[in-house]
Amino acid sequence: MSASRLRLFVAGMIASFAVHAPFFTARVVTANAPATLPAPGFHAGRIAAKAITESSGLIASRAHPGVYWTHNDSGSPAEIFAIDATGKLLRTYAVAAKNIDWEDIAIDDAGTLYIADTGNNRRDRREVYVHAVAEPDPAKDAGAAALRVKTTWSLRYPGDKPFDAECLFVVGGKGYVVSKLLNLGQAGLYRFDIDPAKPRQVLEAVGVLPIRFPVTAGDVSADGKWLGINSVAGPYLFRIDGDVMKAPKVEPKRVTFASPKMEACTFTTEGLLATTEDNDLFLFRWKDFGVDPK
Image 1: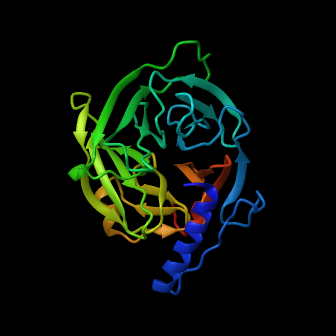
Image 2: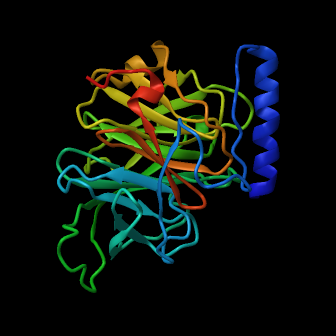
């Protein structure tokens, strides 16, 4: 879907949703809006590196404070980039995999990065992939060799019914995928086992989230207390306390920040850091959600 069509689509969704939820208000951010916007959504920086054309996934390193991993969208070289919180490029690493439609990136406590090749805009892919690579040390030279993929999971859809997905997070030995729906339906929550002995799996449908806007990314805080989900209508926070299955049952906190170009997100000590298709970085602080992270 083109950016112009998506902008019209999001505006239509907001108008439609307002009919069913009269207390819903939104601030729509268009491509012509200034880069610096009123809070919430502090403009934290911009990814200026020419090699990063569209920051589709973002995850904070747990071993290297202040380092964030990102990657490009479909059709780009299979690479991951180390950046800082202002968007400055630190390192570039080739990955020994194909970028069909990379949409998100996740991390676990052991320092493994998980790259979600799960984009399926046309619903013509019968299976999608998640690639696991060991997190490199961005303080060291990247070298010429591509990062070796430790495991690739080939994931089929329940009932062989394909859907688009741009959100991946990993917690408790499970990988979780959230569907991106364009019909005001609730986002579906799916999971698979992070088990190298099971490289081929069918995604298991485990619930729905109270989000009726297209989901573009997700992350779980390092302490496991919070699940953050980004969408074209702004980010959501779920208090899960280490149990992802609480998410479908709790009322999320959210920040209304509607943008058809919203992309990735990851937790920082200050809140949730998000990217857009234009490579802007926006910080949604804990106070913007009205929560105490502790």
